[in-house]
Amino acid sequence: MDLAPFLDALLADRLDSDRFEHVVAEAWAADRYAFEGPPGLAGRLRAWAARAASSGYGAATDRVRFACRLLFGGPGRPGGFLISGPGEVDPAGGIGGRNRPPHAHASGRVAVVVRGGAAFFVHRRESGRDVTVEVPLRPGVVLLWPPGALHTFDAGARGLDVFCAMGAYLAPDREHFPVAPPGGWRDLDALPRVRREPLAASLASATPPGAGSGDA
Image (tube, rainbow, N blue to C red; front, side, top):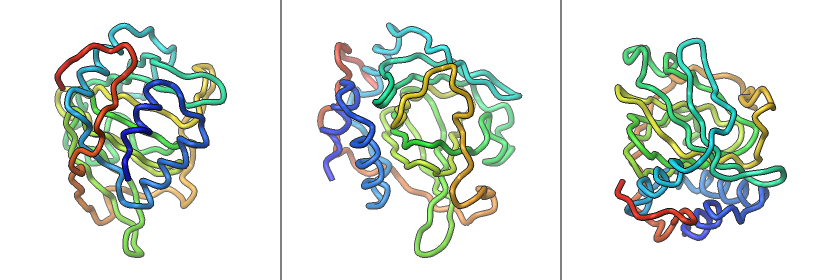
């Protein structure tokens, strides 16, 4: 599966929501949902985000506030954002104690780690059992997961900047981004944990439009 054309089209805002969801679902089903991105991708996204305006989301929990910049998006197509969060308030608190507790969305997601980050956790069914998959994070790692997948990020001690694209853009005034997972809520700390390293780079280009060069 060559995801480079998909990621290029996504970053150029040339994808419709149906195509976005199809590719994400296909990658998830094929167990190819975590990749090393092409060299310099994180740096280019960081440079692009520096020129972007605040999205108006500014999501908050009872612990912390997350800054969010809109890179692209509009009704009827995917939306892309740069989300910045602080270091974990309770590093020893388990997956359920992350700054943003495990949650799910009504549309698929594609994420690229831009700065920092320790791990991504997501619920999957593997070999007939429920597991929590842990993916170690570093700048440039690309993640894909489908609607309804329970997940969260561990921002580590220094915080996390992550590019995140949603399959269907929602305006800042729309509430209730998280939804109940179709299979019900799971305790990600209680499930067997499976560690998955990101697959070797298979994304040859993926250059944000108008973004200059930069190192991850």
